[in-house]
Image (cartoon, rainbow, N blue to C red; front, side, top):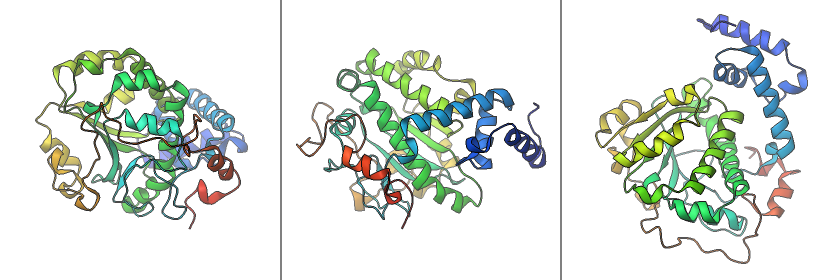
Length: 325
């Protein structure tokens, strides 16, 4: 199948793709999502069909449609800090009783991250303090199932709660995010193989079951040691993903501002936003040897992001897994 050159050609190929699928496989997959699978496979219909059917089966086996997501209506605690969205109140991560013990462990080993407003095209922005990650702690204290459940929950939150606003703002389907990895403070101490195995597992799941959800990835303040790490990481990524990655040193401000308005970009990245009402744009763990959040007896030891009671309720209560007022 040739790559379409016009919207009309694209729709023709989408219609042909739909004819090759059973109606049950199409449920929950609008045309714009089908385009993602076709794009991810360079419009090879057979490959796109296989990936889509694998995704349908995976979501069914893991009951992904019922993974809880926080909204301003259901008041579930967020698992990633948020700034500037209408469907979720601005907030920082906190060790609430509804969250599992594993999520707190994961967050305590990260440098801090935040969904922070939109870029100029309407894509949500995720900013990650990559240089402050405690890779050794992550690799030794977090299991594969725990990290995957955390990232699945974060992706479902992004797609169900934040993306609809992006579509509304852009006046067109928006299905991908702009990501910024800030490598300030990065060093060889973060080259931990167990943590890399976890990162690879996450990359595999995202590329396989969330195709074409990365718009751009800017890696800023990248030190020389990052080149060594990136040699390992590149082998896990497909060519389309690699095309979207921009590795920058310290001279990145003008490039970021080409794609993100200054008022939507934190001041520490060259913008003008400070989010003073929340104590800063992206909460960070400045001293990674000190745990920021404390686990209590209320935080159940389960591999899911939320405790088992919330997970069970979400199976029958749409308010916990959909954007419902």
